[in-house]
Amino acid sequence: MSENVKLESMPVRVVFEEKRRLEAAAKMVKYGISFLDERLQGIFPNDLVLLGAPTGMGKTDIALSIAAYNASRKKRVAYFALEAEPLELERRMKFRRILRLLFDSRRESRDLSGTEDVTYGRWMAGLCEEITKPFAQLANQWMLETISTLETLYRGKHFTADNLASVIRSTHERFDLIVIDHLHYIDAADGMDENRALAETTKTLRDVALEIGKPVLLVAHLRKKDSRSKKLISEADDFHGSSNVTKIATQVITLDRAWNVEAPRWWYAPTFMSVVKERRDGADGYVAVMQYDKRKRTYSRDYTIGRIGEQGWEAVEQGQQPRWATSHTRMEAIL
Image (cartoon, rainbow, N blue to C red):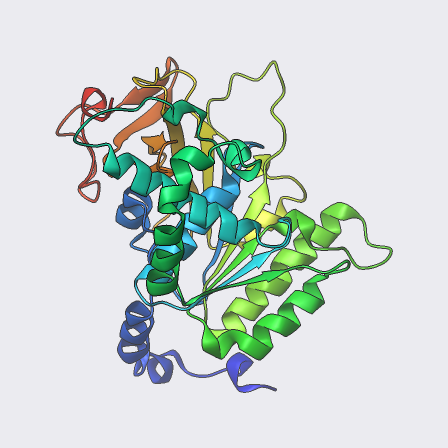
């Protein structure tokens, strides 16, 4: 019987509890998103975090943002891009930095003319060069100096959970965080139905996280909502595939468009962010509204905490927010 599964007295085990707990806390990485860091403290070693959002909600953008945030703080990050085409992540990151430089350069003049047409698709097609080219080399230099510890891997023609686990096991000592984007692009073993394959893949990744003592962030699809559904936010059972997928994860986070919140400017996208499973303290039902800035491809620092009630999402009264929500503010303030 291996050491990690042998029976042993609890009083004997607890002697080492404090040392190991504080060692794990020291290795914790952050989300770089105020609501998640305040609600969850961060991502602990051994965590398997499941991040889900509907199609078009920017799952890759938020996963890449978390990866880059940690790399900018000299954490070593491995990003497995199982859906993206070669160089897509590098291009997305470069474009994001170009946008930041572009809008920062116009902050004083407040001249936003022409910037509405600067989209990732148009930039890829070479249709924004007049505006973006002056910042391209600066973006390259920023990536070299700031996120050099972020490494990417693009999948081959066939990439199973066993392939992924093998790569992680052979390279994990080089990394502090592993991002897998995403679950539904990991190939199933021959003859295995999709739901079982998704559950087995998630279990394999959870086992690997426990084995290597490194956190894994796993991006996943949510089921398409029924047009008759009145649900504002996605729940654990909305993840595509077997319910075992969310049961295996230690933290489950969902993103949804906040259709009931009016965007004050064209570049803002109000977004619901919810922790629907949290193994340490439990889910508390709070749902944050954050503003996603399409100009800079980042989430606002401030957010408004609320709950889903009979009338839809309702913000908590000022002063009634949980103590951990230090960046909570009135909805009017983030609009």
